[in-house]
Image 1: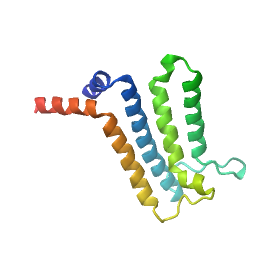
Image 2: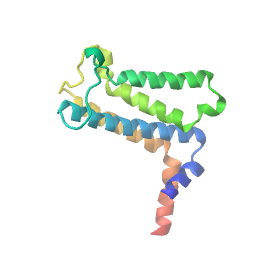
Image 3: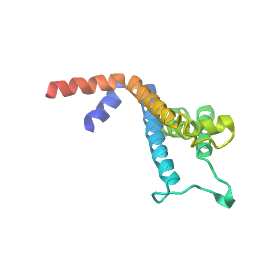
Image 4: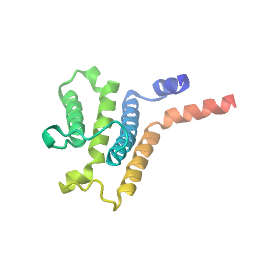
Length: 152
């Protein structure tokens, strides 16, 4: 891992570092949320829906809150806060929470588990997250490949 950290800090401009962290947070969160929601749907694991007073709170609400917080920092935060890794990660996590329930937001009905296309949406979003991460991390990935070739 030290080689990855060194390549991240030495090969990527701070704006690219933020983009890589954001894509990584997006992809990781999207995958984790998919796993959690499938386990809840099938009654497995310790987690359950959050339903205070019988009202189901969808996870896009938390995503909207996170992205709004990042927007607030972008508008009024100190200059050093704009590029803080926590902002990039919060943005990626928040966007994943929103995108995961995008069909519900568009239709305003709980179509979340409709079989038509659910797996293709999961796969598509996962591939988009991976592509964004690879595209933004190219300088770092090139360095890691060079170092790997020089060792072996």
